Length: 477
Image (tube, helix red, strand yellow):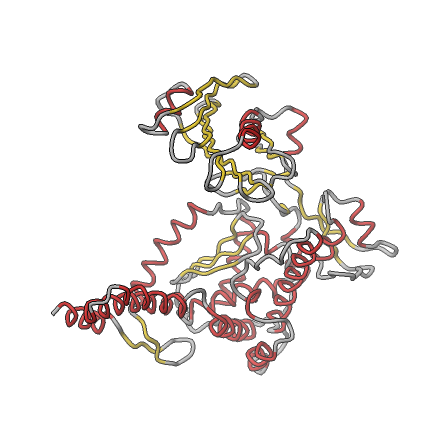
């Protein structure tokens, strides 16, 4: 009976809908109104996780370009929202219902309005083809089917096997969906009056990122890192025959002038933060500076810093030791020791000791457990900075614990001379004059390492290209 009910539920939930972008009949378990509702709810969560870039002029420009492309899509009636995220990551993504995001870091490497439109058009293609809806529907169906098989056969593992199969089918968008989004995006570019060749130019930009990351990893003796951009970056090389095939039909749609708008786009990049922003804090080697919160701290030599919206993490070179810091309010005005003991709940705090540094009060100790953890709290104004230090899978050695304590003890307010270090590097547009080279621009930039390679990458000249007199050149200061 339960098996019959589950199968009936699956049949009731499942639907076949004509895809508005492709004309094919797709398996979906979600109406358009449900899709829009999911997008609205998820959008609010995204804004909590990812800070919105605080430049309304740039936000308005991206919204204008995105709307121009989206109006010529197969779902032009949707209320599209385009948002620039204040992150140095090279990424863009879309939620169901027309919510599309591009990271500030990706914009820095683009060279024209047409290329921006290509990225946004690719993401619009995911929305119009309902890729997120199809992915969710397949995932839900596999879960229900797994329960049905388990009940019908009496083999509990069947649900797990079917779930794994479902995950294998739907993880990521997959090459076919990404190529489909490329082709749809190119159509929308052409219909909107942009040159669809910009889609291929974006692929080249992202492939240069891949080459740069591979070369850096090889210089450090490491394996090549995995690309971060879910779309074009992961699907094909710039000379892929299939990419040419999906872009080709879009060229037939072009009528009249095909806009690129290089200078108009570059003007919007003037002064754009490159790398970290002041609002999220600046990483310089092993030290971190935050202008608005007025603090700095340092990790051991060779450690990397991961700056996330909800926490700051220092990580040892072998990635086995870490110190994480989060920020909380202290509305009850508790002292450091009381607040720390409250945060660890009923667990015992061992080797507790007060911290006093640069006029700030704090407390630290070890949390008892199978593997002890170094914890601490430092009070600054009405805020509490909470620290957790740990080693993966075991207790910390004396040396490792000393590194954790050193990071915690380095926390202090900014000194006047350090405030400049808490300001970001910014893109500056300059007109190339005869005799100027990437090397000469690198010498005057604020980049601490890989300056020449980074400037070539920013200007689509990697690995050996040089700018021509009269061209606009993106440098960093």
